[in-house]
Image 1: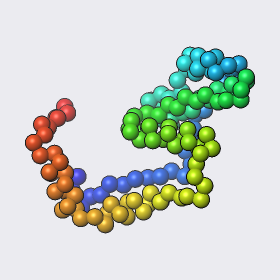
Image 2: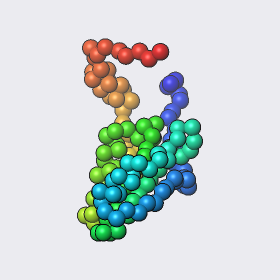
Image 3: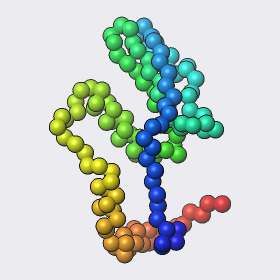
Image 4: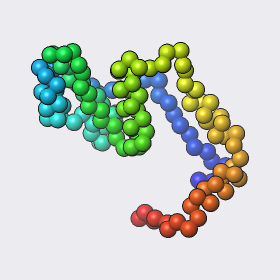
Length: 134
Protein backbone atom coordinates (compact mmCIF):
# COMPACT_ATOMS: atom_id res chain seq x y z
CA UNK A 1 0.00 0.00 0.00
CA UNK A 2 1.08 3.54 -0.65
CA UNK A 3 1.83 5.63 2.44
CA UNK A 4 -1.17 7.92 1.84
CA UNK A 5 -3.54 4.97 1.72
CA UNK A 6 -5.03 3.48 4.85
CA UNK A 7 -6.76 0.26 5.76
CA UNK A 8 -10.51 0.39 6.14
CA UNK A 9 -12.75 -1.85 8.21
CA UNK A 10 -16.51 -1.92 7.76
CA UNK A 11 -18.76 -3.19 10.55
CA UNK A 12 -22.23 -4.18 9.41
CA UNK A 13 -25.15 -3.49 11.74
CA UNK A 14 -27.16 -6.42 10.39
CA UNK A 15 -25.65 -9.64 9.13
CA UNK A 16 -27.57 -12.67 7.90
CA UNK A 17 -26.88 -15.83 9.89
CA UNK A 18 -27.39 -19.40 8.75
CA UNK A 19 -28.66 -21.59 11.57
CA UNK A 20 -30.05 -25.08 11.99
CA UNK A 21 -31.68 -26.70 15.02
CA UNK A 22 -31.62 -30.40 15.74
CA UNK A 23 -32.91 -32.59 18.57
CA UNK A 24 -31.31 -35.72 20.00
CA UNK A 25 -32.12 -38.06 22.87
CA UNK A 26 -28.60 -38.22 24.34
CA UNK A 27 -25.37 -36.26 24.05
CA UNK A 28 -23.82 -39.13 22.08
CA UNK A 29 -26.73 -38.93 19.65
CA UNK A 30 -26.27 -35.15 19.45
CA UNK A 31 -22.60 -35.48 18.48
CA UNK A 32 -23.51 -38.06 15.84
CA UNK A 33 -26.30 -35.82 14.52
CA UNK A 34 -23.96 -32.84 14.24
CA UNK A 35 -21.32 -34.99 12.56
CA UNK A 36 -23.74 -36.17 9.90
CA UNK A 37 -25.66 -32.91 9.40
CA UNK A 38 -24.82 -31.10 6.16
CA UNK A 39 -22.43 -28.16 6.36
CA UNK A 40 -24.19 -24.82 6.05
CA UNK A 41 -21.26 -22.68 4.88
CA UNK A 42 -20.62 -22.58 1.15
CA UNK A 43 -17.73 -20.37 0.03
CA UNK A 44 -19.73 -19.44 -3.06
CA UNK A 45 -22.49 -17.92 -0.92
CA UNK A 46 -22.85 -15.48 1.97
CA UNK A 47 -22.58 -15.50 4.92
CA UNK A 48 -19.36 -17.37 5.59
CA UNK A 49 -20.41 -18.41 9.08
CA UNK A 50 -23.14 -20.67 10.46
CA UNK A 51 -24.35 -22.30 13.67
CA UNK A 52 -25.97 -25.70 14.08
CA UNK A 53 -27.36 -26.45 17.55
CA UNK A 54 -28.57 -29.78 18.81
CA UNK A 55 -30.71 -29.86 21.95
CA UNK A 56 -30.30 -32.94 24.15
CA UNK A 57 -33.59 -34.22 25.55
CA UNK A 58 -32.17 -36.32 28.41
CA UNK A 59 -30.37 -33.50 30.25
CA UNK A 60 -31.31 -30.23 28.54
CA UNK A 61 -27.76 -29.69 27.26
CA UNK A 62 -26.99 -28.15 23.90
CA UNK A 63 -24.23 -29.23 21.55
CA UNK A 64 -23.13 -26.73 18.92
CA UNK A 65 -21.19 -26.76 15.68
CA UNK A 66 -19.74 -23.46 14.51
CA UNK A 67 -18.72 -23.07 10.91
CA UNK A 68 -16.58 -20.02 10.26
CA UNK A 69 -14.56 -19.51 7.09
CA UNK A 70 -10.85 -18.91 7.58
CA UNK A 71 -11.40 -15.78 5.48
CA UNK A 72 -13.24 -14.30 8.50
CA UNK A 73 -11.25 -15.56 11.48
CA UNK A 74 -7.84 -17.05 12.18
CA UNK A 75 -7.23 -20.11 14.35
CA UNK A 76 -6.00 -18.12 17.37
CA UNK A 77 -9.04 -15.82 17.32
CA UNK A 78 -11.32 -18.81 16.82
CA UNK A 79 -10.04 -20.47 20.00
CA UNK A 80 -10.58 -17.21 21.95
CA UNK A 81 -14.13 -17.00 20.58
CA UNK A 82 -14.92 -20.60 21.57
CA UNK A 83 -13.41 -20.07 25.03
CA UNK A 84 -15.49 -16.92 25.57
CA UNK A 85 -18.65 -18.72 24.43
CA UNK A 86 -17.96 -21.62 26.81
CA UNK A 87 -17.44 -19.16 29.67
CA UNK A 88 -20.67 -17.33 28.87
CA UNK A 89 -22.67 -20.54 28.40
CA UNK A 90 -21.38 -21.84 31.75
CA UNK A 91 -22.55 -18.65 33.46
CA UNK A 92 -19.03 -17.69 34.48
CA UNK A 93 -18.81 -14.26 32.90
CA UNK A 94 -17.77 -11.56 35.33
CA UNK A 95 -20.66 -9.12 35.65
CA UNK A 96 -20.12 -5.39 35.67
CA UNK A 97 -16.92 -5.64 33.62
CA UNK A 98 -16.97 -4.09 30.20
CA UNK A 99 -14.34 -4.59 27.57
CA UNK A 100 -12.91 -1.56 25.81
CA UNK A 101 -14.52 -0.65 22.52
CA UNK A 102 -12.72 -1.78 19.38
CA UNK A 103 -12.56 1.88 18.37
CA UNK A 104 -10.38 2.57 21.45
CA UNK A 105 -7.94 -0.08 20.25
CA UNK A 106 -7.79 1.50 16.80
CA UNK A 107 -7.17 4.95 18.31
CA UNK A 108 -4.31 3.50 20.38
CA UNK A 109 -2.77 1.80 17.34
CA UNK A 110 -3.02 4.94 15.22
CA UNK A 111 -1.48 7.07 17.99
CA UNK A 112 1.67 4.95 17.94
CA UNK A 113 4.78 5.91 16.05
CA UNK A 114 4.86 4.53 12.52
CA UNK A 115 8.66 4.65 12.62
CA UNK A 116 8.79 2.57 15.83
CA UNK A 117 6.33 0.10 14.36
CA UNK A 118 8.37 -0.21 11.17
CA UNK A 119 11.59 -0.69 13.16
CA UNK A 120 9.92 -3.36 15.30
CA UNK A 121 8.91 -5.37 12.23
CA UNK A 122 12.28 -4.86 10.53
CA UNK A 123 14.03 -6.21 13.64
CA UNK A 124 11.54 -9.07 14.08
CA UNK A 125 11.80 -10.20 10.47
CA UNK A 126 15.53 -9.62 10.05
CA UNK A 127 17.25 -12.73 8.75
CA UNK A 128 14.00 -14.51 7.87
CA UNK A 129 13.67 -16.22 4.52
CA UNK A 130 10.93 -14.61 2.45
CA UNK A 131 8.03 -16.71 1.24
CA UNK A 132 6.94 -15.57 -2.20
CA UNK A 133 3.43 -16.45 -3.36
CA UNK A 134 2.77 -16.88 -7.05
